[in-house]
Image (cartoon, rainbow, N blue to C red; front, side, top):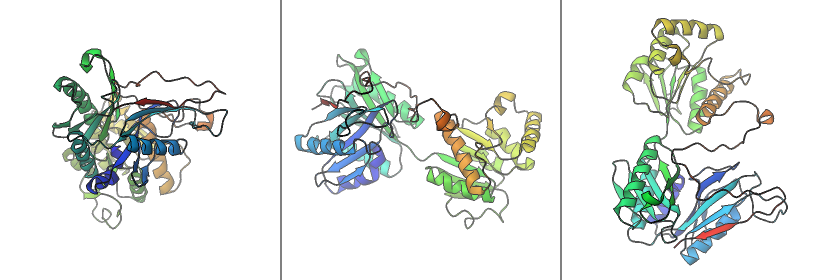
Length: 399
């Protein structure tokens, strides 16, 4: 739902009522991940998507029904094999989707509005909604802000709110959306509950060192992938906003000095394109000791070998060197700056999701992988759908 924050926060400001359908769990191959949302207002206007088109029409109808009935519904969609007119996922996976009308409760509605507004402004926020548990709790929402404050709640007392807030805080810190399973004891309501924690966090950083033509192409690809992109180089004649108009920041400074003073986290990717030892060695010596997601360095295999020896002499350990992606990028046969940028981006994506980088034609794993999240659980065991059977659209009603 928070991925539609810009539109939905405006809808709330305009006084429009709407229902939101949010993907809460994915089993097998499916095009959208937990947190993906579709919303429908009382005029029939729709924004967002919960699949590649397989179930959108049915979800749209369920949103209209939720608006009419003022009821929260948990719907399960699975594969359709034998009947082209039956709703199902042609990709072979299954989805659980929570369809919830905008709460009218005096506590829940402002909390949800606050979360959407914060997400639209690019602030860190987490929204926790019960998707499976006691019927009267389904759809209830708790919002955690970046300063630790909590809005809304589940209306069962402070114990459950505190338990869920602690789990939401961990996911907010990680910048990850995921399902949280609260057992009998932790739920404080006599039955297990499953909670979808949606996280909205600032864009992850991509820092490109080296103001070369390859960097210009990588900036464009990085922005396309949703990164906040910085270009850094010590040479002012090359490091200009005119050369990198799409970069969020252009910094003229020695690369290692900039990296020492700037903020990075576990989602940050560092792309070293200078392939010049006087820049690379002090920069990589620092970079390989930082808790970042990716460190890659451009250069030929000869350059890499020389760089490897220099880094060892500079005190970098073999274990630290194992983190270095060098030569940078996947083997796509790239020649142009744009093709090289694509190969670098492909390696970053593969590193993020545990992809092999091999052609899907020759692979045997699922195309759409689900990230492994802490405390991840399914609201109920996934239903197996043997080939040739009709899928079942299962509805669980809340309030």
